[in-house]
Length: 324
Image (cartoon, rainbow, N blue to C red; front, top):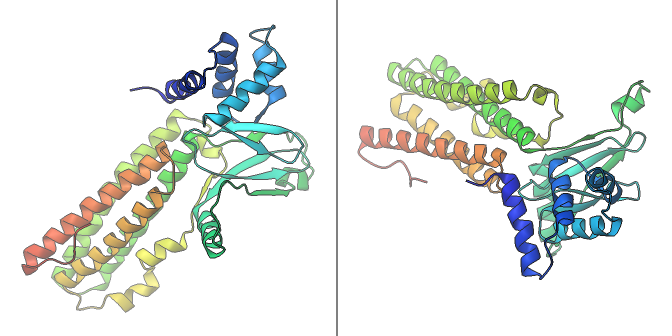
């Protein structure tokens, strides 16, 4: 299997071939410089880095090669408000936005599917066919507000590991919410069979949660500074309450007489909502390690839902609902 860097190089070389452009050592040097550097590189930044490897490389060569990276889908041009065009990684990177400090030029990347959805709704309302868009917030960062010394100009850039970390945090929060719901439901009902069913489902959630936590801890142990990186993927936690009602809402849903079959029906409804939500959510992202976490979680939710539906069929002799 090709690594991501090798895939990106193939994309660029195929582009050169398709457009009758020569593949030269200097173009490859610019490509390598760009691929090895996270962040937002200007032409000047790239030129200075490339010159450290090849003193003969020209500014125009760097500029034209960066433009070719944009044309073939490896890079995207961004304007961070300082009058300089910059280039950021685009191939299989999730679409994102920027918060920019006008004092120290620190830039933070972020993604919010709620914001993306709102933008899509506005576009549909006005009947537009979107070509591209950017969303940037300019202001003063926390360090500059407090005039902290030692504040360095820097860019917090997203990469696969940050996105993967945030994706794992979301599904772990989701599993925790489900576990709390089923445990509270088991405590609330006095019906023995209903309590047993909720407890069984809670144990299944606990096992799945343990697997996710192991993945998360391994990721952090292999990347020592990852836990301190700014949040990239922003998620509205209120969505969790729509699928797994909070503790105070449980008495409205479950009473002391809730039996095994009723408990199973409640669980099927919750797991179906969970499966359908994450199926839609995963589709919003380009292929990446973060997206694969959501896809994997969706598949696990589907399997859990299917097993609950089979249990319902065993108890009643009829289907609960159409399987996903």
